[in-house]
Length: 269
Image (cartoon, rainbow, N blue to C red; front, top):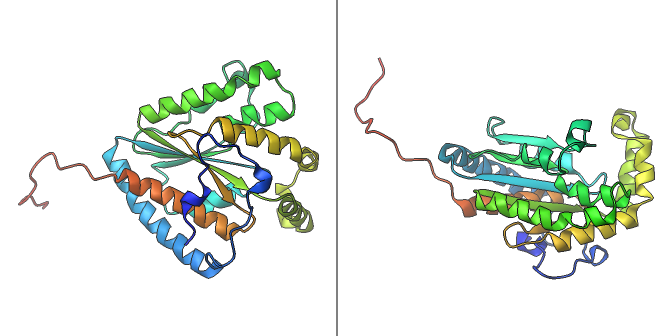
């Protein structure tokens, strides 16, 4: 079995995405065995999520980032489907609204952080403000370059207040992106997923890789490390993310709170 620790970036080390595989090594596991393991992980995590919710002391934030077509939506569907929606919420961050732009860049993010007992999933996140903002020169370098330290401070604040931050970069090759975009064009049922702007963004692939490398290097901390997930194969991507999340939840080991009273002998008529 592929260990999730294989995907965790080493602290204080450079990140060269071109040198990190986008596919898992041959022989690690098969598609069939991966699906079995995902099903097992989903059941285990559903039970752990119940305990986390009942305990009501800590929370988990799963951050998913990646290039277009990397599979953020697919990962959420595959990995989180066993969770009770009462205690598990997905937040997708798109272009900021006028109101959001009138605040600091973390204002809209902080509002969506999971409350105690809950699991939050960010489909894109605060990292957009050192990615798309940087690539498209939406703010001066003097502004976005300071945001790495601000993000680290923000994530440390979450950590210190009981939120475990799990960050996954879904790493795909440029060729895989081409195939997935073409598949959306070839299938009328998938046209809703396609936008001509996707082609323009693809032209900026190299710029985005540089921006991602900076974010991964500068915001990889002991309290909120990055995991680079090989994502050319969807089933492998889903398996490894589920392994990372399961290990995180088992490490927290949430427990049902003790009963406040002795209910032995009590019956309901």
